[in-house]
Structures are given as structure tokens and as C-alpha cells.
Length: 372
Image 1: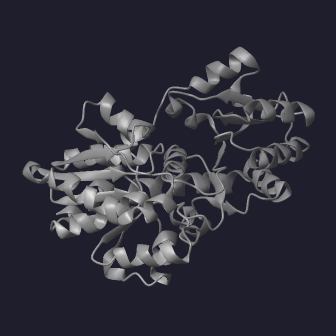
Image 2 (image 1 turned 45 degrees about the vertical axis):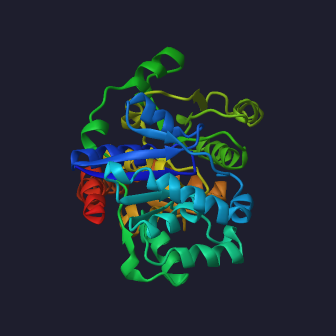
């Protein structure tokens, strides 16, 4: 069995990556984790009784990592050296700090180094000095990106195409299709039968109200043409109470349902008429929720120029908008409700695209080929 070590300095929630690691196990490849104590992946590894270790690095303070780089690099050399007897010869790096502090020690030990490039990562945000150092360290490294937009960014920065591998994100179709309808029972309990609604779904982390307000105002415009419109917002956060107040202020209490976090999301998708990716900088998990909606035949509206173009076949399997203008969004929503043939075409194309190009099994096989 091939063994790899994943260094995660991001610590953020990443369902897709967790699923991809499980898919790798099916391809006879075991991944061990080294991460911070607050890491979401670390908690997931604990739950599944997988091999993990704690990472004590200034993961959130890049400037401190740069200042301490010589000493931390030496420390990490001995850290990786301790994994040598376990047969590990491949290092996977997730997060800038992991790449900057572990790549050189791994190269010295003769390991293969693979960087995972997040689709929402801002290379400009690194600053000129660290970006230059980042690109220099990337020499001799294989960079895996999950969107064409990321690949094009890397090429524009001078990274050789032979060092970049594009792997489309994917989902397990068996896990996400043909689910029972939780939404219908929820609707009967609270308002009317769900089938009477034109239902818009979205998932939001309530960190700010900017995108939420645009969605609500768009629903207010749609309501003038389609009175039975409903906006279902799944998610929680510090701004959720403000969102409830905003819905009341806009006179949309009956149209906007804030249902909070949902442990079992898969039972909601089949009941949406349209799904909106509300994140301004979509993550891999935003890719996942979009693909899940598409696999259930739900047309998806996503922000333009934010990597999700890859899934939509030039607009044949989804709709790309700026999502900064409620009038533009409301027009597309009304068209979806009124132009039944167009909606059916988007739905059929979405199902086909996911089935043909965006499966978890394919992503796992391609990842394994790189590790081999």
C-alpha cells in the first residue's frame, strides 16, 4: 500500500478533500495527516480513527513563518525524517505555510512533493516577496489544481505546464441522488405544500450580509411576478440574526426561510427549483454543493469569473452572473420559472455533465496516478 503524508496548515472545512482521501484508500493509497489542533480535517481523522499528528507551526501568521523560516525548516526536516521508517516518500501540502515550511525539507530527503492549490486562493494576496519565494519553492513540485481558472493563473505566473495537473472536483453519485424529501415535510409543518412553491435554495456562512441582502432583494423583485417564490437559506453564523431582521424589514418573512445548519444536506436538493452559489470566492466545498444540485437536475446560478465556469459547458448546464445586482439575478430567476423548456435543458445537461466529468471515483483515480 502506498503511503503519503498530508500537511494541512489551512485547517478549514473541506468535505471534498476528505472524500477524495477516502477515494484514495479505495485505490490502495493511505494518507496520514499532520495538522493543527483546530483543524477540521484533524477532527475528521479522529472520528474515523485514521493516522494523524499535531502540527505546531504559525499557520495563520504568514509573516512570522517567513521570519522564522530557517529555524522552522530545520525543525521540519527532523520532523519528516521521523516518518522515513514508515515508508512515506510523498508529501502533500495544503495551505501556504505548509508549502513554505515543509517543501524544502521533503526535497532534501528525496520525497516527491505535491501542492494542492485551492480555487479560492489569492496569489496576489501573498505580496511580491513571498510570491516570488513561493514560485521558487514550487520548482520540482507537482501542483494539483481543481479548476481551469487556477491553472491559468499559475501559467500566467510562469509555472511550467508540465508541473500543473488539473483534476476536476467530483462527488459520489450514489450518495447524492434519489433522496427522500425532507423539504416537503418541513414545508407542510411550517407553511404550505412545497410543490406549490418556486423554490430557490442556497447555503451561506453568515459572516456578512452583503450577498444575503442581494439574494433577498432579488426575491422581493421576483415576488412581484411569482407570488409563490420561496428562498431557503441553509447555514449559520454571527450575522444570521441580522438576516432575520433584514427579511422582516424587506417584508419577506413569508418568502425567506432561514433553516439554520442542516446535518443531512442531501435530503434538500431534490426539492429546489434553482440553486444559487452565494460565495464570492467559491471553495472546493462550494464546487461540491453545486455539483450535488446539478446531479439532482437542479439548475445552478454561480458567480462569474470564480472558477465554476468549468462545470457549466459555456452556459449550457448552468448560469453565470456577477451576483452583485439583484435586478439581473431576478430576471434570470423569473426566466427559469417561466421558460420551462430552457429549465429542462439546463437540468438534463447538468445531470449529464456531472455523470461524465465530475465523479469522485474519477478524481481519486487521477490523484492516484499522480502519486504513482
